[in-house]
Length: 428
Image 1 (cartoon, rainbow, N blue to C red):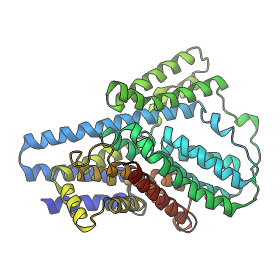
Image 2 (cartoon, rainbow, N blue to C red):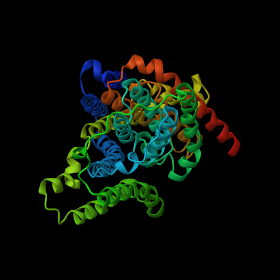
Image 3 (cartoon, one colour):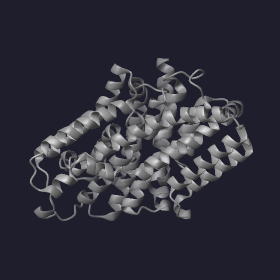
């Protein structure tokens, strides 16, 4: 049975990694893998009560992550529908590429920690089309945005799916992950930015022609500011809600979504244009969230759960400990592997490999895992949701990214990792 389960998981994982060559959506591969794995587990175990109990336990953890992501993605869609991100993008203005790269890097870094790296990448890459006329410049900035978005998401419990998984799973707490991983994440960004700024030198920004007034947003400044700051306020308040009430984060995000929904309905209750009113509602936003990604998370988390219940992951953890020995090296390897394959199943597998009994919340393993899994995906463009999004928006070539951006991401990754290890040894 164990051999068959491992084989099915490896094949499903390979199909996910080869999504584009196979032309099969990774969500389909994840769901097919989950169905086959649970079928094998149920047939081999022969104990319907035990399998049902294990499935219910796994579903509870999966549902918490899914509900949280659905709420967060809906809030972001509502802000975007109101052109709320213009609050940030309209204030970015500089004449030199070197200055612009610093500005874009830090805006992306902190915006990613509040939203998520995927949404932030989409917003910032779209902004580059308004700021830069030359395609080569836009591609280079897209690479920097990927590094900044992944670094910014790693230190925040709501900034990256993998960090959110660790937070909801109880492996990390909001305050400690921010205290422990913020400085390494900043270093992970600063090193590539410093190298890039030096390379760009005094090159000027070549802006595209200005758009005419008919293409400007059709929402009022009040609506944009209200939905932007209220939406971000809800997202930022979720960790505070959890620490005060000790309720799961998905309750906080759903509570905030209800508040945003009510405010939106009140603001637009006298709107005469029915089409505009419908476009700005949360009901509309719910139809625009990326359900394919949500389904992927369900499939991959349920797939990994089978490996956990059959004790395959705990056996793999023991083998790694015996073969490699050092925790920091093991986690560094996991982070680099996340550049090749999706970091969500990697972190999900790691959560099953190591128990909270042996590695309590906020221990070295979990914090370093959040950093490495979050930032390691920047090394290759296919290693993170941010990279895949930028790849689609600007049609970035895989080989071009390896030549121009991978080296920058790699030195930033190792620089931040070194800072985290030194920081941990100093304060622990």
